[in-house]
Amino acid sequence: MNPISTRYPINELFETIQGEGFYTGTPAIFLRLQGCPVGCPWCDTQHTWEKSAADKVDLATLLAKSSASAQWAELTAAEILAAFKQQGFQAKHVVITGGEPAMYDLRELAQVLEAAGYRLQIETSGTFALQVSAATWVTVSPKLDMPGGFLVRPDCMKRANEIKHPVAMQKHIDALDNLLAQCPPAENVIIALQPISQRSRATELAIKTCIERNWRLSVQLHKYLHIE
Ligand code: SF4
Image (cartoon, rainbow, N blue to C red; front, top):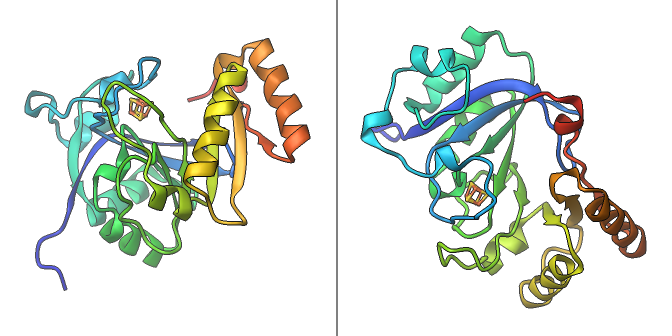
């Protein structure tokens, strides 16, 4: 047994409905990890980029947060499980997101949560080697040519259960085609296009392409429902 438990930097944990990708509509506990060096200019969680010691708080302060902030708490897997129970969460699907959660070794977290009956999903940019359980559902949302200079890894693309790609213009689909040619995914992978910012032209392009390719459409249901 590992005598030193891994401590995970948690920016947020809350229960909602998964609004994106394969598990759309599934009640889920979201576990947002602090830290991301990828640097996407349009990132809507920029408050998770820096893991500053000045922003470290305890669990009670974290749970009392009423808006997005850079505050984070450091918790072991056992403490995370205890927090789920303390909060009265009912969902059995746990989405590990960020930030970039693949910066961390998630195997201990998976071991503890899976033993307690949870199913894990990770949402990642595909730019860090994955340290997840065999049962974890891997959603790669590949981030190409971002300022951080990280490359999408062929091993992440191969491990992906689902590749979810934000699109606004044809060049985004062309970039995905190039990536799929260079880093082939598994044969049974699910590919989903996600229109950026609910724009109608992006949505039309995504619908047309999904029908042509037999891909899936991911519409960010939570944004239409105005939930977190
Ligand atoms: S990888 Fe995700 S969290 Fe990191 S900058 Fe890009 S969108 Fe934001």
